[in-house]
Image (cartoon, rainbow, N blue to C red; front, side, top):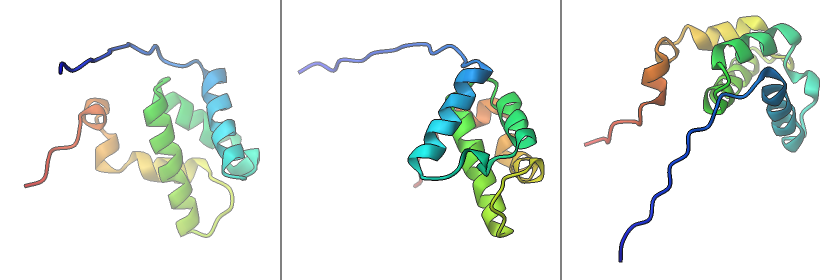
Length: 102
């Protein structure tokens, strides 16, 4: 049997759609919409540049940083702690599939 593939180019999300995505994910996790302060959301949206995968990974990393400090609200400081990590320095490196381990 042959293999069917499908390819689609997804355009970057606008800020409103990105915020709606974040709020929907927080709602599904039973977390308040105030989990991220306004400054943190602005940095996340600017850094993700409309890319849903980058947004999700940055939100998750920021939540982990806040949890390490036993904080209930993610701030700009938490987001920046994620952004200074090496894998965030190159947009292309983040999108590249992981190398198979030998």
